[in-house]
Image (cartoon, helix red, strand yellow):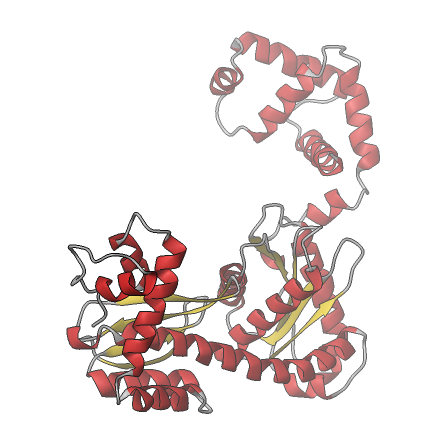
Length: 404
């Protein structure tokens, strides 16, 4: 095993008291030589470790077997089965959103989980539980597991280009093989956006499209994805046959946010009836619903499903209620109190307790609260116990908030 003496000699240093100390990683060697430049120690330690590894006559056997598994048609499955067969331990590879892709064997040591990342993109995890004598295999196995995940992604990219053309045609209203591929199954559509000004946004959206399609593929759901350009930036689009829409929406969003640190917002349509004839019209409806759900998603890194969104959102957000908002504000402005009564009304609409409790929240006397509400009723021409007036206020204040 390499020792610090080997590193010192290559650095041209004098012998030290701990020259016989062994190390397993370049970082460990740097910690053992704290007074030397860290980068230089790491570079030399990597050289020493690589030389020691090459001197093993069985290294070609190890690397050849791992490479054969990683280059097979089902690389994740072949890798974990090879690891389990060699070690009599456990190995498992999962997708970035947590779904198991392949697992084999039984635990025979302490569990370890290694995150698999490539260029700041999270592509999955490797979990192992190997006997002590096989612990050194873990980092090597992790590198080949990463290679296997990237190979699977590359294979999926070629399939995705075909599906992209199909989906582009369907979104444009053209019937074709895409509709037939989905058959008579119910389907849904989702759209996702990134913040304006995201660097290389087209590439980032293309990556999101690939991640989402990978999720559907590994769930055995027929689906296509594409990227569409837009005024404020583009959006990624997915169309898939749905079995459990709420779960799929949640897991799709999880897969997207697990793959990037960027703020992803996702809007998901309702469930649409399948069938080739109905599909073209259904896709346009689904696209409209997904866009509305996206616009209702105010928080970053969040998602909204159309049938779970506020039903009044589109009415409030499209400008139809601007006249009502202006009218209500003009009536309240006649009080000339700097907006105190209007603010009190907003708090009243959002409060679900007693007036005494609301007065405590607003830090005013309850009689002051009653006075402001009574003045509001006078200028609005109605009673706050009237559902019609409450509805007008809710819509007016909601439209005003959307304008801001």
